Length: 257
Image (cartoon, rainbow, N blue to C red; front, side, top):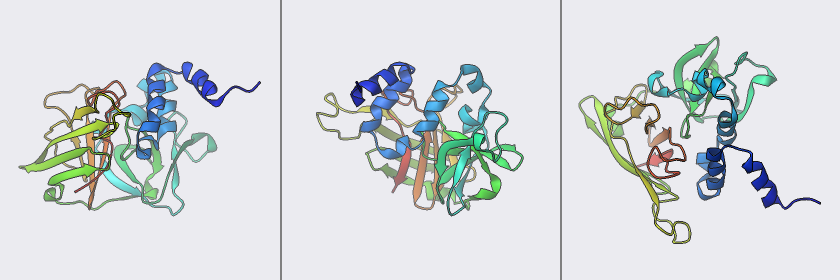
C-alpha cells in the first residue's frame, strides 16, 4: 500500500540532520528567493565534515576572498560547476543542480582554477558557491560611495540603512521571520527579529561585507551587500539556529530605496 505523501516526507526528513529538517519545514513560510539554492544547501549539509573542511569555494567565508559583483552572460544561462575534485571541468559529473539564468548576479572571488572562477550566488543564505567560467560572467561597473547612502527595504519588511563615514559605510537594520507583520496564525508571539551588523565596511568592486567590530569568528553574523544601480543584493551566513538573530531570521534578498 502506498504511504500518504506527508508520511513519506516525514520518514525522509527523519534520516536527515535536525538543522536540515528545520530548514525544510520553514521553506513553505518564506519567499521563494531564499530557497532558490535549496538543493545545493542540502548537498552541503549532508556531505562529510572532512570534505567540507577542505572545500573553500563551497563553504569558505567569502569575507576574505576579494569579492566583486558580476552577471551571467550566456543567453541560456549556465550550470554552476561542483567544487569536489576533479571538478571543475565541462564533464557531466561536475554539473551541479543549480542553473544560473542570464543576468543573474553572482559574487566573484579571487579563487581561480584554470578558466574557472569560484563564485557565490548573490542574494542567497549559507554562501552557496561553485565554479563558472570567467568568460561567462560580466563584472559590473563600479559605483560611487554615495550611491550606497539611504534606507533600503525588502519585500517582507527587512530594512537596512547605510550611511557614508569617510571612505567606509556604517549600517543599521533589522530582519524578521516570517515577516515584519505576520498574522497571529503565522506567529502567535510576534516575528523573530535580528539586527544588522554595523560594520564599518569598505566597498570593493561594488561589494561590502558587514560584521561586528573586532569579531573574527566566521560563525558570527556576516552580511554581504552588493550594489547594482537601484538594487542592493544582500547575502548572509545565517543559519536556522539564529546567528543573525532569532530562529530562521535572514537578511538575504533584494532591497530597494
